[in-house]
Length: 157
Image (cartoon, rainbow, N blue to C red; front, side, top):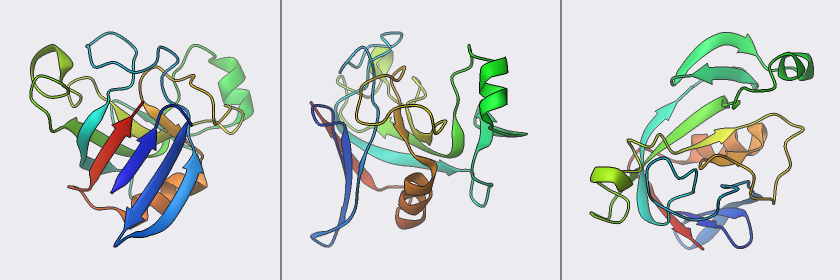
């Protein structure tokens, strides 16, 4: 199970009652919320619906869940400051609670909420994302390799 605590900006992966990974993250600047278009991080019980980016190099840039062939550099980031960088791997999340984070205008999957990598200069431990959960690339690869689709994700505020 992956537990993401918005109050502490921390992700913990627990398997068989053992903590295998605990790392700072960055969730939504707009705080918790489930509405489409809110820019908020959804709360509740979710699941890893898809794993994208197996074997991609660290810093690989994704757009529309597809690798662009670019590798992120500070120069690329400076040249395109408007981009919301999704790097290295994607764990695409889907809600499990109808009316809260699944179906209709609160559907996490349709909101394209991911756990994904981000540029190294982005701070961790601070809520600054557009709704997704940002992680450092190396920690993300470690998590990606530990989890399967169907892994439960609890996001709490």
